[in-house]
Length: 70
Image: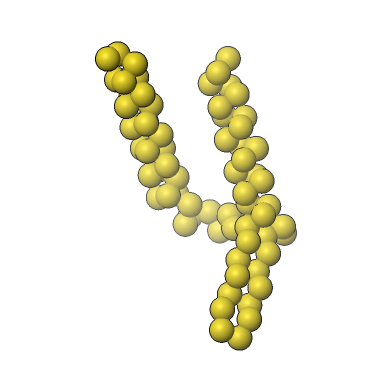
């Protein structure tokens, strides 16, 4: 039962962190507009592929998780 409690606490903390990031993200004007982010605008649709932003977030999250494992 204590394992379930630990998992629920970790999931709760992760949800709180994600919620905080969603509140802060609109205040970062460069997020989503990096040089490697691709946008294609057609006549009827727009396709947006944030490649550089995804790589940057992946590196930052990997570093954070690496530091927490130590």
